[in-house]
Image (cartoon, rainbow, N blue to C red; front, side, top):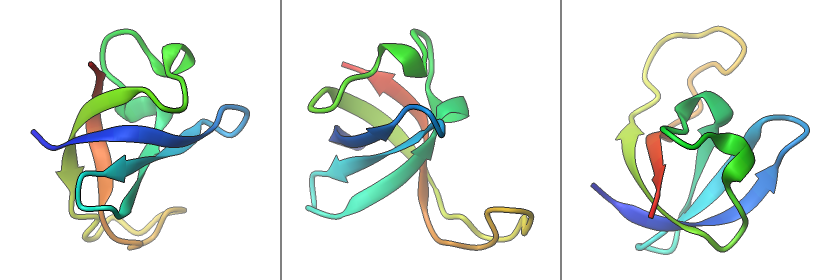
Amino acid sequence: MPKGVIKKLVADRGFGFISTESGSDIFFHHSAVADEGFDNLQEGQSVEYEVDSGDGGGGRRGNKGPRATAVTPL
């Protein structure tokens, strides 16, 4: 599983961004956080995650590219 660091949390909107080991950022939604939950995350915290390619689905999010799923604090 890839590892990264929580770069930014937007707690009131329920999402954030992870700075990946490659230096890019990846979006995650609060529903993607495993175990301890979104409310226990902090900026600068190390996490592991899986990547969803973001293909298809449409809806509000549309097809905006990859996003992190199964986000797990380290």
